[in-house]
Length: 202
Image 1 (cartoon, rainbow, N blue to C red):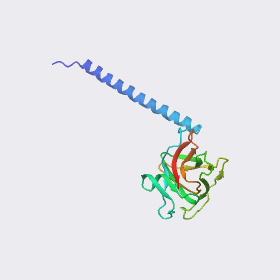
Image 2 (cartoon, one colour):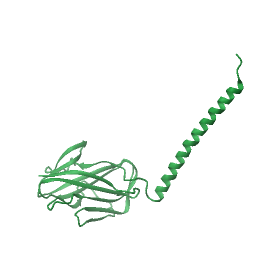
Image 3 (spheres, one colour):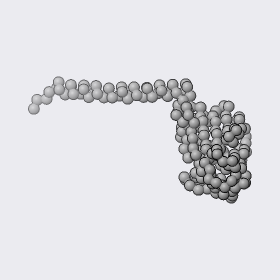
Image 4 (tube, rainbow, N blue to C red):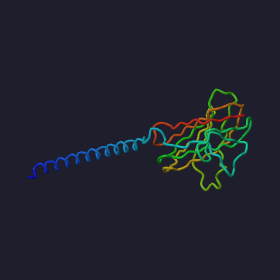
């Protein structure tokens, strides 16, 4: 059987050409992706919203206030609902984890509007901190709607998979179910991350 060398060489050249085009297209997509990432970095818009996960109430094992109960667990000591005693002042801890590296710029949180005697976030606590070595530069205030704000004049950098924990004193109001709104801004995102947890006061 006579072998057609020309056909074989043509077939090989065709395969090489297809493979070259495939690799060039793949490299072109990667270049476009890197260019877009660079553009967003220059304009501080890497993400649509801060990539966060496991945003929840945290039950502190060693310093837990027995008056504070939890429900709707999402794993470990994390919960999506807190149960608080009415007309009291109790600590409440909030946590999340970063899915990508980012720079925290602003946190806003508080209870839904529309209720005259709704709970209020009174102040930030440091009960879970054993010793504060160097205080962070932050600005804290409560706005006219009763929402608590924490702003970082110098954005606080977090690596991928980093936990964040903050504890507040809550002044509870009338017995009712409330939405607890959390809004987080990072320097790299165009929009804020929003999460609503549940609080039952009874």
